[in-house]
Image 1 (cartoon, rainbow, N blue to C red):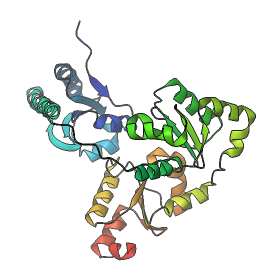
Image 2: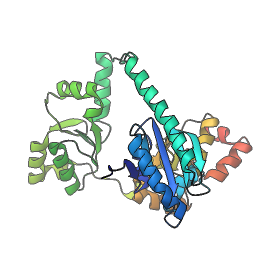
Image 3: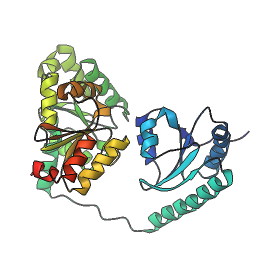
Image 4: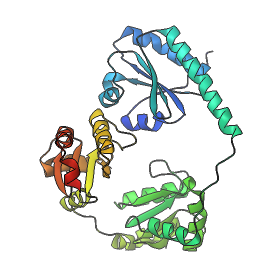
Length: 333
């Protein structure tokens, strides 16, 4: 019996974002169900994924994910794109099995060399913080949101039962909160236990003060005290106003500057970076309420949207015009 292939079939834009950098080198296949050569090449792609497990093999239907296809400039199916260290390295267009096999073999050897070099190289020295710097970092973290959960994993992927239960309880009472994955930072994981005098995780903070772990969280919910402690959320117009004024230059986009999720967002990020403009961003794909309400609030129906000093400047085309006229830097100064 043939072994199971190692291809990740994309189910959503969020799924693709998580897969894109899973390995140093990824091979991304764009295909179409209606296109027979695409379907035939899927068997080749599956076989290559079994043969070269050191690479990440990702497959998606091009027409089902137009923003991703636009970002990769897909003009025909099938198309195969090699992504190396987050950048497009090479591509093959059309159902050319020998060319695809040769390309994959080339990058599999390259990936193996990268792994061997990394194993042979000495580990970089970790940056160390002074006691005062570490305490300031912890103080900033516990106060970064009105309700802050330090947990193992993330709310969408808890990595222990206690963390999962904490997430479920906070969701049940409708509590908005920030989170920090202590498995991703060993320094914070150890130092926070001393800082809070609380030896286990999860830890829940309200307004920068520790309230305890899972058992205390359960008690506070049962008594109704937690609901009284939780800061009341802003109404939607107030929240939008705060977001717009969060920084002198705010960009509401699809994705993030490092991983834009549509071609227009990618282009405006590049424009702002080339102009040397400092800005903060908000990913409207992560908050459907903001995504819909901001279009009404600003009377601007599309994204990205660029705000300067709390005022809407416009989208990509207007940003281009402002740069061409030399006005953008003047507006942000």
